[in-house]
Length: 305
Image 1: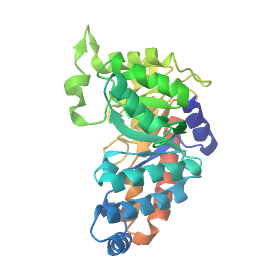
Image 2: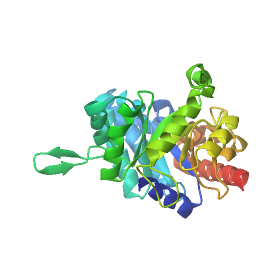
Image 3: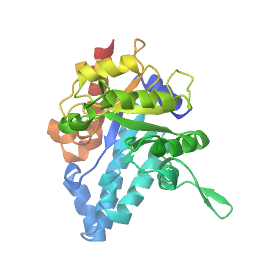
């Protein structure tokens, strides 16, 4: 099962974190951007080429200490087809280095449309007699608020392709409570969604006790993290909101079980922009990202022990 591979990677590196690859041109070294724009002109192709080089530099610096990456699809889609190609090549490059890839797409639909999303991002597509891999991610973030009609098509693809999903449950943004905290029969919506993840996950059991249906639970809600960890013993958590969004190590500690397992914590800007925070030379972006990843690892591991 796919999340078994993620847990294996977390155990191998001793690091329950994921690097979010959400690049903007202003996060890149200016000389890198200038070089590609000189080659391609001020075009989407030039921007995408710069971002791909940046991503590869980060992956080279992180692959042996960070178990996974999480590219946010929107940052590539904004660059049109060159950006989509950069996303695909980033995924291929990371997986070749042995990293687990969570595509952050938050896809949401029903029936054959959801089947298409699933096949695109974490499955295979039949072309004549050939079976082709469009993007090749290991997992996909999804929105479960269309109910089971939007999740069941994913489960079949997960079974066939040995992939996984992370369902939005309690998100890190400030307005999440407008819907997710509303009560249904005395229970908040996020709790009901979490329980649905537990149920869906029964179809994708894993050897560590966690299923192939994970939950997105934000670091900015530590009380709800602890509540959900107790209520969802078979659901693995993807935890955004650490660092730039305000969540700290103490806030995410409740996402882990008594064995120190059960969650992986994301940092995006903290890693991508580490060179800016340190004030080091832009060309040292990869080394700065590695230092930040090691600092984050120590911070979180220290909090869950």
